[in-house]
Image 1: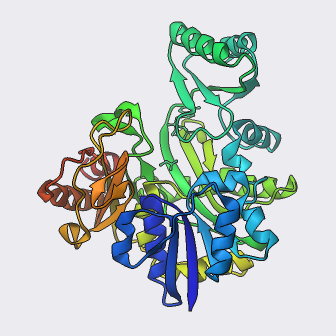
Image 2: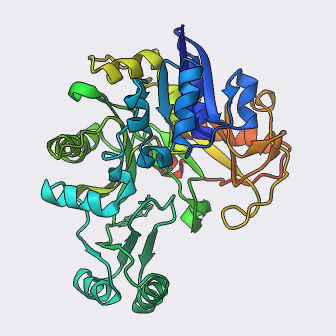
Image 3: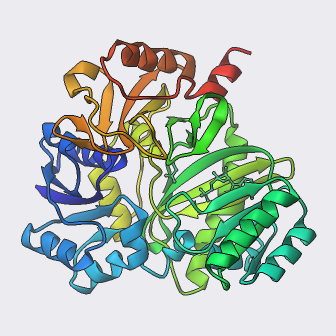
Length: 416
Ligand code: AMP
Ligand code: GLY
């Protein structure tokens, strides 16, 4: 029987741990640092932080872990895969060099341009005057992306000249050589592809998902880590999905090998479907949160076996369900994302059953962070799944806040 270590602490890592626990080969799942809400599922929580790579390595060694799966990007960009591999531990994820696809916007832009992979036109600059010139060339609206890992806060879309000068003068006053990617604005429909990339060129793709990043209904309010997601996205045709895979995802995987930084692990491609075809918006080197909570329960096979085979570079025959649509709604603390108020009572597994709940900011049964939990329902279509998830949430006694319109795009398409 196998032992798995999942690194991270959110609802995504809870969903990953559950996916491994469903495997008949897995006897124990450890999550570090995890959260209090996970212990009801028999998950073992350890308290090593995601940035303490040496202690995580020692944890995997002393607990005789067979496979480690990294949920969030920070340890990956710090090089956790390199640290584990050095002592012969099996870990599924990109090396430090390959994790630059998420960690460095300029690295990614260089790869995309060099290999002619469709993306927004961009210029990387390190001064105020060069940034202003780039805005003049690209036109408005324009997108500013800070180089380096921004944890969801690095992208700003600006619509007029005043916003441009406010943004640039603030940035270059703070740091006169700040590295900034200035990018043309792409208009279209956004969706995410999660590709599981193994060794020896073995690749498989999970069902696509759509995230809802803005805090309030109708995509209003500040950007957040994600307020809900649904999957699969049936109204985006198979042909479009295949095109995005063959024009964006596969050429990037090939380019990474040719550059001497081969990619393994989860490649999250943020796609904008424009009138000129699909284009890359961004890459992440891990599953999305909350997308993982709606994608992983769709895996009908043995998830441990899938990841183990990919890791060994063996052919896989993945089995994802196709009958239902999964809708996940994030319950967040009041005041999220600016200043979340902790202490609200968090619904228990039995309050939500038969629906699924994955926990994030939870301590002693109370909210301890911004995003607190994701509640997930599935049904024959998005309309049914959406109805189920909101019927349940409305019965819960809680001060937690949520969006009322997750999966609205699919519901609109279904009811046209
Ligand atoms: P990121 O922080 O890279 O995940 O980007 C956040 C969001 O900004 C994306 O999900 C898009 O909705 C938006 N975005 C990023 N780049 C562009 C672009 N070039 N054009 C339009 N929207 C963009
Ligand atoms: N849900 C967006 C992300 O995980 O980056």
